[in-house]
Length: 365
Ligand SMILES: [Zn+2]
Image (tube, rainbow, N blue to C red):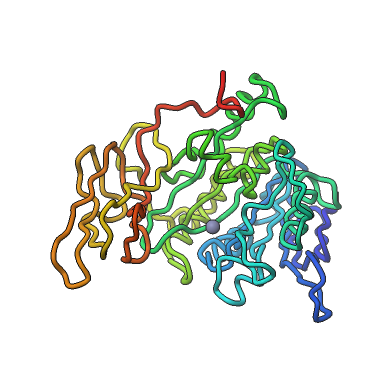
């Protein structure tokens, strides 16, 4: 079957490139999102691959481009639909957000359980159009799996975020467990350290169910992960290669590829979690003392309760406080910037997770 998306049209066994119009700009041209469709010679599942939702997260963009280039349509079962640059306005300016109206473009995807009476602005309209596309309401087939490539903070280690699977109004508990099994298969296949999202209440407070992968997972029931590939603004070669390999390994896990292309496999660095227990995201510890941060930890360091994460010094350099963490885990990244205001977090951590992957949306059992 020929797969079409925007101006890209690929017959079985073909790779096609083109553009998909997301909106029309006030100055008269469409905002075109670049598209690559790799259509396998044999019919099968559809994987959607997205990157650059945050415009400055360029290692993800490069990894998506290179993953598409590495795939041979003749050895692919099913189809890959890739949007390597979901936020071209952000990419043009090396900015996280688009300049349409500055708010986070990765918090506008649909969540049927959180109605808003506020009329949607253009960024939200684009998110909804993209959602309709990957759930199969447009020309291209619905995603059977989705990988959304991002980057985190300066110097951060690469990792895969696995969202909580919510049950309640959208699906019952049994369906949530079946979806969670597929999600675990996807997250594990990518072979980067897996970090579960914040606990359910913080997850929805932060509106993460309205991220691209969060919405694909929790609104549409598609196994979907967010992959974080290091720093922003410049392409980090090792993390790019890890991202390409992660995408190919996901395709192997979903029986779309027999094996990862050898060139991709040899280029990929081994990235292992420094602890062997389940972890979740935690932004902290927080500083009570204001001043200038001097970190004592770096990405990949293991921490335990009492580990000093950073000192806070006066602007003139004298020591004011040492900030310790109250749980165990490891450092994903130091917080960017050194100015510490009241209650500012100092790091992004992966901490021991006692919670369940499948949780009730309301937070009650
Ligand atoms: Zn991002």
